[in-house]
Length: 358
Image (tube, rainbow, N blue to C red):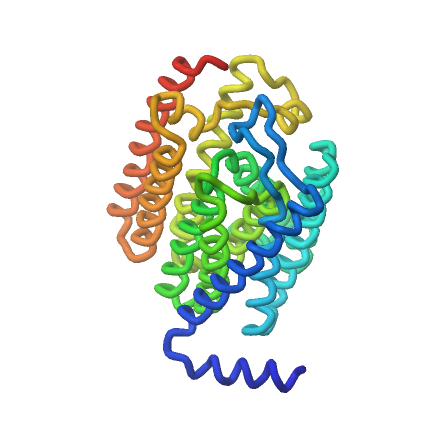
């Protein structure tokens, strides 16, 4: 087996567009796996049933996240040697996936899922994946660990909460992954570029089955795994060693569509008295996300999803440009992002006032 893998590695090193091979390989693999797991989920009755807080009207098979996970991990296994950091991402992501699968089959308390996310982040940190920008002393290291925990758990839940319409989470993660891929290539980080193009390929294949009308869902297993993985890769990357401002701003910009939605709904729910503590915040579900409010404004579900895709793409492009620009242009590009979100705030407030369930 080792000889076969070594031969694969050697042959791939000679491919001028290795990233294209990885994109196609992960895409085709995920496509087949999604088709298979859709049938398995249907046969085993692992379904997402309609509820008042959900927008689909028929039971939809789950296990889509398992197809993406297997496609991603196997593609990496066949084509790369696992770095220490990547081992942490995969091990932590596996724990997240398993807990999510249990939740998809038999609902778990939200606090259990949060504990699993904290444990998975701990695994990530033990393998050396953590934010690194504070002084190298006890409070600096402690601060970096705390901020890494907040970042990973925050993005994991942001993507999970965002998975509320057909194709929304998977498509948005694909766009963010492609943005990280381009930055990885521009910054001479082919390893990270290959990891993100593989994730994008898996998501794009799944999107064929998941865009409206969806015939399979990610489930909590898939949405949490995608959030955890992309957050971990963002921490692994050396996006600008010579400029800490860029290094911190770039992942925030690329993933800010998830961050904005999480922050906005959290503040809105607290302000309206809908949540009063962490437990209520974790367990609360409602139709007050960005995509819900766009529909409340009159957009169809596909239009709302495409609208968000465009926002994610715009911010991804801004993140890419951020890597090779001067301080003044950096400021202007960040300002551009703020202006875009100011427009979104207006839309969301209008949507909240128009929605009957708010």
